[in-house]
Image (cartoon, rainbow, N blue to C red; front, side):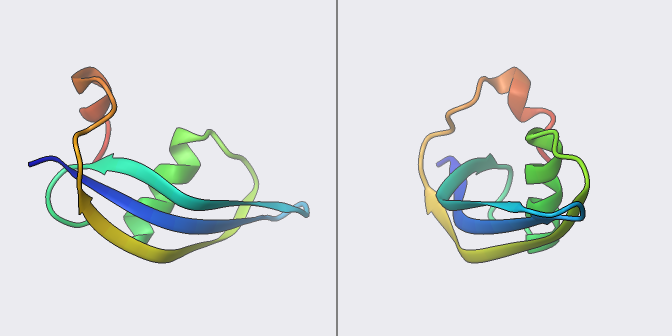
Length: 77
């Protein structure tokens, strides 16, 4: 079965401000993803600049069909 990660996040920018996400879901390969890998993926996928601290909260792995096309999944580590 396909695996996805559901989580909340908080991103602070070094030039001020920030963004948050609640119950955000992403496709993952395998059965788990570290907070560090997840933070890096979010920043790169959203093409964010001047990122300071990234907090991953309430992370859980869920069984759910992948939403992205297979060609997009190849870039997810």
